[in-house]
Amino acid sequence: MNDPILVTRSSMPPMEEYLEEIKSLWDTRFLTNMGPKHQELQERLKAYLGVQRIDLLTNGHMALELAMQALGLTGEVITTPFTFASTTQAIVRNGLKPVFCDVNPNDYTMDVTKIEELITDKTSAIVPVHVYGNVCDVEQIRRIAEKHHLKVLYDAAHCFGVRYQGRGIGDFGDASCFSFHATKVFHTIEGGAVCFRDERFGETLGALKNFGLRDGIATEVGANAKMNEFCAAMGLCNLRHIDEEITKRKAAVDCYRSHLEGISGISLCPVQKDVVQNYAYFPVAFDREAFGADRDQILQRLSEENVFARKYFYPLTSTFPCYGNQFDPKTTPVALRLSSQILTLPLYAELDCADVDRICELILSCKR
Ligand SMILES: *Cc1c(COP(=O)(O)O)cnc(C)c1O
Image (cartoon, rainbow, N blue to C red; front, side):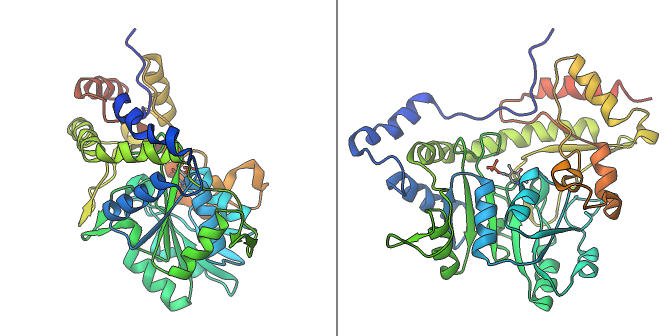
């Protein structure tokens, strides 16, 4: 039996490089609370991501939760159910009501033709997801938001380093939240960031991540979501290797595409125009009728050969038991269909083309 191929594998800098990076912490004993590593990573990421302002947090989820709070959202928020649990949980934990908009069948981001019909006098924001690193229709979303005086908060957890028309993806909307979780393209072990333009928003967010404190007095009901120095040091190391990381991922993706493009019953995400991609995921949708096998059968066949793909995203977040039966997934039919058809295939920098060949061979052997 071949060695298992997992859906992802965290990239690590050379161990010596990390040890070198954290050495000074034994002298300074400055382990957290916005120390020098935190500040340096913040500056470097601002430049790399091409954003005006950025604040670092413990994880992507707290970035979303506290960004929503700092934006002062109320009532209803239009979002997508075709995402990781975090997006919807952050909305609900802010006491807001998620209103689920369907996704478009091409790149699986929010279907902008269906947003306006969901707006009510209670709507305060749109929270779209650049899912799999695919860029949302940022122009149309901005137009709708301006017309209806709504805030826009992007869940940018999947799109570290992605650029649209030469602009960093984190520069769109009122704020964008990144995740630096170990499984993401760039990671700080656990970590996250909020990118934004408004200085006042930044001050509120800065207080919220530190117990709501300003000058020792709580002016907001805050949390503790500060990135510590060991995580920031991991980020500094990983950032030195990020371009190489993305180039390697691209090679694996090119290999997948060469096998799977144009096969009936298989849909791949299109390469978007004017977008610099990060090759974060390789989602494949299987149409059972046309392909002759369904997603679950393919997942099973792969696992028999020690290859582990992932049903990402299944089920839709709107159907999670923690929300009871509040939401009807039939109101988002495209997302519902996709969630039954999609698999994300193994993808990480060290995945070599021979492995991709074998994975694709297995998949194609399921075709009837
Ligand atoms: C990973 C992820 C998050 C949460 O990020 P964490 O850093 O794991 O808290 C949020 N949204 C999406 C779409 C994600 O994939």
